[in-house]
Length: 389
Image (cartoon, rainbow, N blue to C red; front, side):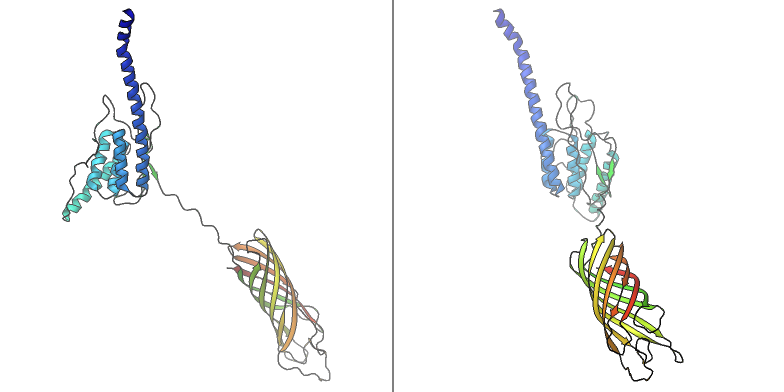
């Protein structure tokens, strides 16, 4: 009899404990389901499917009435172009979160939406009723017995008795741009005490364009005379125009092979005794294969060109010809000479495909006919610019 009374005495307490445990498990399931619906709505919101996002968040609010759902639903209605429903849920959020840190920003949104409705009405637009949509959650209901409204971004899961609150799902950031959207994106962090204005990240700087395979160059310098003259001559002006292409080895590699076409000009100033001075012109047309080695912004090149020289202005008294006291040799017209041109070069990249160039070349023409004094040898020093594109 005593044991029976003891069992019946403890039965209400055991039942109450089981009921509390069952309610705690149900609340945990509801919170987990609310989190899933929050993420589902966020995904739909990010891709602009606002109606599906609203449906997911309304179902999440039924699982756990967190005010953050109301704010997000208002955002979705505003961006989808329904100002009446957006105002309804914004106000519901403010009633449930009177101390929300973004209250001033939401009130500005409400004022802008009301102005939009008035403008539409003035244009004869028929405004939809401002009643809540079917199945909408009660906007102002708070947890029974609560003394303060839940904060923005409060966690969806209700904590067990005497346990500290856990992490909360964040209130989703607003997406730009949309009608009446603010110029900056505003995100509300869980438990935040101030608004954080986020500006879009600046795009990364564009990578510099790699120089291309084709290139052009122009250079000026001096041309000094070695062998080939009976007598001496002062250094003369030299000019070169170059165009080239890289056939083997991409331009960004260290070692590359290319071929260049070179058109150059120089002259020899003649001033024999008892005669007025004149100039003999040298136009060179050369094809030059070369190897180039790059090291950072600096590159070294070496090549051997071969071509022809058009020698104009030649006279019997020229220092390039054998002295002919009897004047038995007659020279007329332009003379064609073979030329071999070894060259060394240094390039320094200034920016992009633009580089400064320094070239040291040694044009050499074998003795073409018996009446020339000797093979013609010169030394060229050229400074210029080159551009690859």
